[in-house]
Image (cartoon, rainbow, N blue to C red; front, side, top):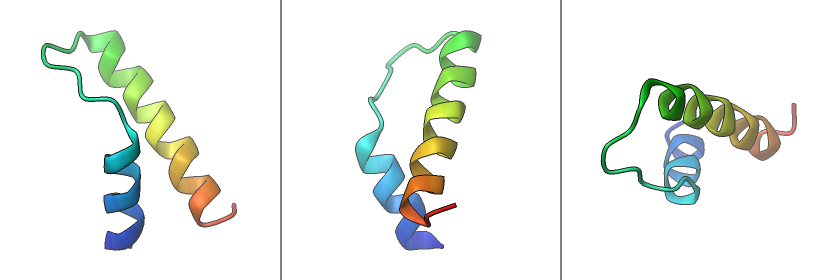
Length: 40
């Protein structure tokens, strides 16, 4: 599990001052990447 989280965190773009929409978009992107990594 930690390997998946680490891999996702390395792939996401850092946003210095995120908006609420940035949080929602980052969450969606992270979930998609994680699902791809574990092949869901």
